[in-house]
Length: 335
Image (cartoon, rainbow, N blue to C red):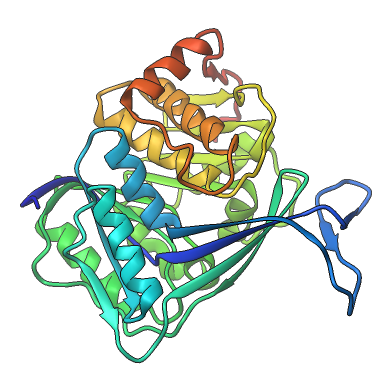
């Protein structure tokens, strides 16, 4: 255990079950922006394979990914006081994640997700148990806080987190909001956004946060998101890669080539790789490569953690795709 950690991950943890299906169809609109996964109603659907991951969820993935890359990490979360919860804690212990701040809820079960994998893309059915969220008073100093998905009524924890960050002004904050945080709207999230060193969202989440319809160009989204207060804004866009803006320079990076087996955890892997790149004193464009390498490795297997890279794997992957670098976007609109 440590009195100082490189990264404190704050968010819900889940048990994930991955179900690989083949007998399904996908129905999309003409522009392919909105698609539906279709199964025969009231039928029995054969399943090709089932994989269980004991310790998943955005925060757990970040804590495990950071530890794999050789940095200390801790997880602040609430689990059910049940077999799944204690197995999840044991999985964290196995990964050498500091689990002192894992709390057990005697009234409610551990969160659970069922992930339907079809042709390399995933559809997630997630159940968040009701929680009484709070931020513990005794938390070690962290160089970075990774604040991500929580269930409803998480505002007391967020208030405690902001108080912690006020006491530790040198601690950097990466904010990767989840569904219930985004539903509160950008006005409610402004205190967190203004304290964030990095805001990282996918393109759909960016549009939700800005309360905009689809169709905006990436440079415009980046600039408008940064206006909300974060020092650096990152937007990921699946197979199209990622973009970043720090107020002075805007960068775009393609994905590394390869076939995706299952995409759950790609965003977590990217964010974890990126922040660990910055911890290791790389530049922002190179940190984007760290994130892309980690995501590339994760989607080559089932589940969000099996492919998370260690330090040697990161070095090898970055060398393998040395020719793929972030490109500066020179002509974005000035306002």
